[in-house]
Image (cartoon, rainbow, N blue to C red; front, top):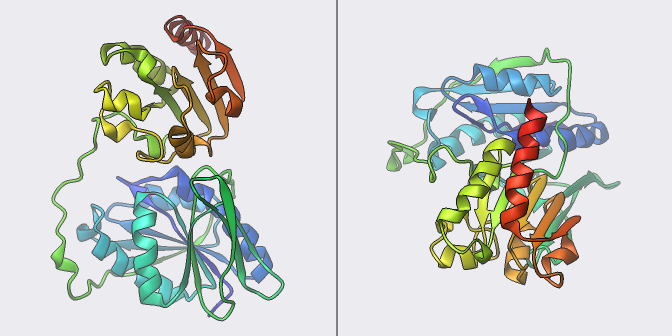
Length: 327
C-alpha cells in the first residue's frame, strides 16, 4: 500500500462534476500528512476536457480510462474500470464525491479492493497512528459520528458535495492512459440512454443554488415565478413534500427526508414553513434564505436571512434586481 491519495474525478459528457474538484482539497491535505501524491482517475469515452480540468486543480498524477463502452455510466463497467485503477495505484485512501455515481460506486469498489468504507463524510484527517479519521452526519444531520478506519487496510470515503471549496493549481500533472478490460458479467447491464428528469432543468442534488417552494405557492402555475428566478441565478427548482403531494411539482424535485438531501451554497425557501422532514434534507446548505408570511415559521430558526412577507411580492422583486445586476 502506497502513501498516495486517489480520487475519482467524476465527469459527465466530458465536463468535470464540481464535486470532483472539491474533493481535491481534502485529498491534498491528506497527502501532506502521508507524504504521497494526489492521483486522479477520469473514466469515460471522450474525456480530454475533464482531464484538463482536474489537472488545473493541482493533482500530481492523472490516470485516464477511455473506451466507447464507458461513454455512459454503467455501474458494472465503471466498477471494473475504477477498481483496476485503484489496484494499480494501491493508495492509502480513495476519495469519491458523494454524488449518485459516487454513492453507487464506492461500496462496489470497496468490496473488490477489500477496503474499509465510510460514506457521506464532511471531515477527514490522518491521525497520529496513520489511520483515516472521518466525521459523517447521522440521523438526518441531527448528529455527527466520528469513525476511525483501520490503519492496516486501504480506506475509501465518499465526500459530501459542497463541503470543501475547489482548489486551484498550476497543472502539468503526469498523465497515464489505462486500457479498459471488462470483467465477466459486466455485459449484464447495457445502458442505452441516460434520461434527465425535468429536461434541461438542473437536478437539486447537483446545484449550487436551489430555489424551493412550498404549499403557499397554491398551484403549479405559480411555480413559474420560481423558475424565472432560478433561470437568472442558474439555479435548480426544489419543492417541499406538501407541494409535491399537491401536484404542484414532480417528486423528483422534492427536498426532504422522503425526498432528496441537498447541500447547496445558497438555499431559498419560499412559502416553506420548515417541517422537520424538510429541514432534514436541506440543513447542510451553506446559506439559507427564508420568505414566509408567518413570523413563527420554524424555517426562520435555521435561516441566515429571513423576510416576513408575501412571496408573490418578494420573488418578482428579487428576480428584477438580479436582472439589473446582470446588465
